[in-house]
Amino acid sequence: MEGFNVNTLVRESVRKLQPYSSARDEYVSDGSDMIFLDANENPFDSGVNRYPDPYQRSLKSLLAEQKAVSENQILLGNGSDEVLDLIYRAFCEPNKDNIITLPPTYGMYKVLSGINSVENKEVLLTTDFEPNVDEILKVVDANTKLIFICSPNNPTGNSFKNDGIKRLLDSFKGIVVIDEAYIDFSKDQSWISQLKKYPNLIVTQTLSKAYGLAGIRLGICYASEEIIGVLNKIKPPYNVNQLTQQRALQRVLNQDLVNQEVQQILDERTELMKALDSLEFVIKLYPTDANFVLAKVDDANKRYQQLLEKQVVVRNRSTQPLCENTLRFTVGTPEENKKLIAILKAIQ
Ligand SMILES: *Cc1c(COP(=O)(O)O)cnc(C)c1O
Image 1: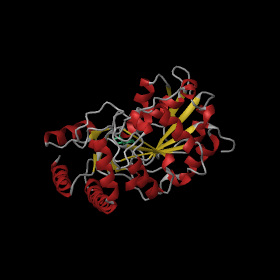
Image 2 (image 1 turned 90 degrees about the vertical axis):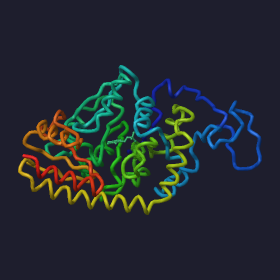
Image 3 (image 1 turned 180 degrees about the horizontal axis):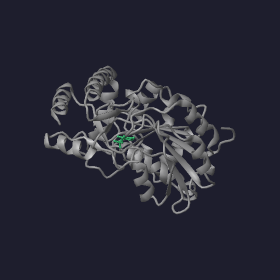
Image 4 (image 1 turned 30 degrees about the horizontal axis):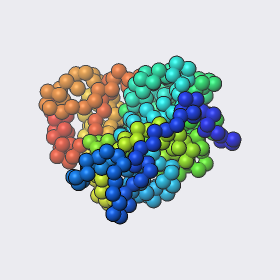
């Protein structure tokens, strides 16, 4: 991508914006004996009486080291949902610009398009669930700012082949967002390693899945320093709270435990797939690179209800294009899986 200049893609109002400067932008405690009388906080120490670090420096420094990027290439948000919303707001002019998504995929992109009054052009995946690159490039117009690629994809579970994604990165003059919410379950390498090569690439990740921290809401965005600079301008100053920063830091430091849990989930996934495969009402299992399995069944509504009667909640994805009569099973604990498998085998 020669001659890429992110400023030509940024919304005019954002380009002109003078960002809010918070008290903690100017001074952050370095542990020395400073007296902070600048932010109208309650001075009595409770562990959380101070505003959090608006740039989450400790957490970013650890992530930067682990992912081999600079701290200025990271933006953290209140879940990836906030990160994705910031990307829309930075680049898409409401009622003028458009974005492209590749259904069947994560539903939030479309919702965010609606919230931000941005047209969502849709280009279906091929029947083997790969991006239809020729068709995507045909649909791109002068107002197309973003293409959202979810890999491994939710709800299909597969990772997309590199060639198609590379072609998009090479040809598209806007920004390609690769949502890697499930990358920690995948054999494939993260696209973070390609950030230097592609200034039009944004990679998002989250602590909600493999890291087991959906409850604290921590989403991560990796991109060029220029793109991160734009997103920093418009993010709410204290969008990642103190408790979240602390818990995230502990967990990211304990990488061995995360890896161990991921391996256990992958082992359980193998067991679950074997069991699903042996069932008469399961017509097809789709290849998965994530912590869930998409299965085509004879009658998804019926099987969904039968499981619900046994207190098991799965996701019926049948309304999604190319996903008729499919159920999505998240991999649970070994005990949960045992129960699920016994219930599935008893269903007629
Ligand atoms: C679960 C999921 C997320 C996670 O969103 P958070 O807001 O970080 O919890 C993001 N993208 C996809 C595709 C997901 O399935």
